[in-house]
Length: 323
Ligand code: CP
Ligand code: NVA
Image (cartoon, rainbow, N blue to C red; front, side):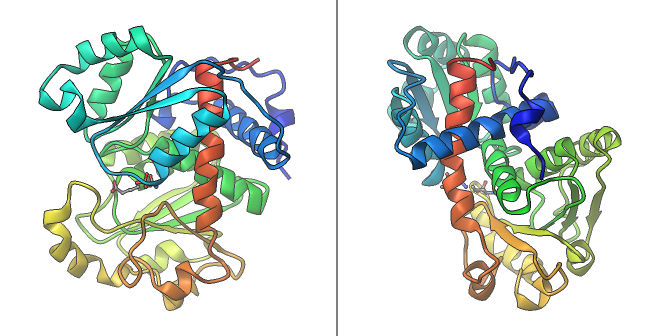
């Protein structure tokens, strides 16, 4: 079993933000996961860990959320701090105030900013113009917090990353982009099965291929769901239409039909394969109830792990640092 703690004992975490997992080294990721396990264990034993006592996290949402909103708000509270929920429509950003001014103003009040929005450039600019840590809570192209929770879940079940294959079946979207990066950082093989025209963005596939040269993982993008699925240790899917793509729902439902993760498709994975989904899920569309509610599904452990990895990220970025 990979020992995350031993692997990062001497390692000093020097990141200032979480904008994309591509900015993180394998050691950075291991450090976050090791800290997550430590906080998860303390939480289970009711040991208080007020690492961020008196600190405030602003949480800007321009898209809906259940998991991200609740896990960040509960997480900062468990760390002794305070979460400030800012709906885009309630703040001046929604009326056109610039990201630059918003970043500079919020930095005078709070100790960290989490943002869920459309454009990755807005997240980059918050970090550029503000002076506090910025955490990406999902954009149209990335979802790094989700992938950290996925990696933690995989680690807890399988005990390692290298030698494992993750099959992502479905849309080449923010989740698959971040999986491409996350898997190739930690040395896990990734195979994406998607309909023609719905492949992940080629720049991100190139980045993943570049990462894989040093992590010795394999990257494959195919239009065959079966080929992607063969011998997978982890099977992953996400919605066919992401937030902002509601108008395309009908056409996507038609195009993605052969990519539904059902028992037949799942049977091409290894016998002990696990099923993951970032949620929200739509049973009968991207996945059938027998798979997502079946014995090999770890979706609720995965959702719970959002809390633990985000607490670790906040603790490392806004608190004690990597020491
Ligand atoms: N997986 C995820 O980010 O869920 P929410 O959209 O509910 O935050
Ligand atoms: N791809 C999905 C993920 C939701 C957590 C979306 O962006 O809507």
